[in-house]
Length: 409
Image 1 (cartoon, one colour):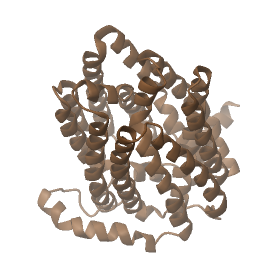
Image 2 (tube, helix red, strand yellow):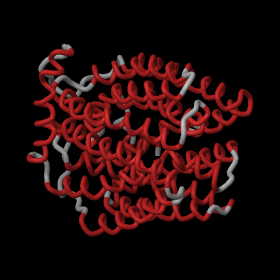
Image 3 (cartoon, rainbow, N blue to C red):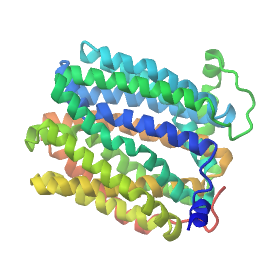
Image 4 (cartoon, one colour):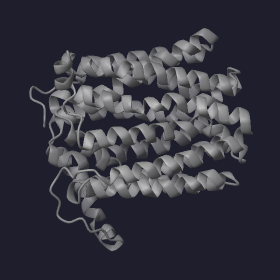
């Protein structure tokens, strides 16, 4: 049994082991302030529409930097971008921790959007470092490393109970800054996965090459198989509706369903526990049964989760947390596995840059639209639209998505 265990997880060394350690810190950091983010912005003078506008502006900037990030990830390498972005976040989160008004949250979000230029490089590095036959298991282990996020909502809830909303969120953002500093130090040990032209970076060169980056990220579709385009076209619209609702779950739960702040932290903790219990078996399922069926099941689970959330029954809210976790575990394992299967290594940075560009551009519009619909018409409308999108995506995945006979390395 020990021999089989070692064989099954033999790919966990080098870059993979470093990234697992980093994700243990960053996943905890990411979910800690997210628990009460929208309430924090409100407490600093923002409205529901302000929250949507802040995130919309951030995602708009993020969108156009993803193209450059994807181009530079393939041309100049993955490591330098990833390391620089980690240290930048260490400083940026101090802006959130000291914000006197919501305007400083806007500044912080714009700076974070700039740092996320490294996201295509990170996605490409992960795909490069996991063997094709182990991708489902590899991506599930990458999420299992974030088991530390189980504690994030609970820690956020404890900070809230002890210090109140504003002081508790300031303490949370200080912890986030420390986590990114530790991550940056660990990322220095990463090994580059592709041959690069040169590692030097200058702002002048970046601006000169940006038009070329846009062109190459757009024309990358000439070099990837058509099933990759189908995958992109099916799931990109769904992400629009997911982004439209994400910041408003806590507001809807708190204001409409009358869920108090600490109970919301408990529900978020349950989601995290179920998610991390499932990722390994789901990863194995994705490697043995294929990627398509888990993707269909993810949309079905998501639709059930939203239905239970809108119903608002106390027991149903716990079921909502469980089905949300199932949806995420299936999607976050199967989608990147199939994306890597379909994309040649030398085009991964550009393809992920373009995919992130479209996702962020649509996300920018979605976040603003979600806040507008929530405030101007009815809080339930964004969630009803997401429910419809989940249902249609399940059908479209079953009809249009195909898996390759041979996976890219």
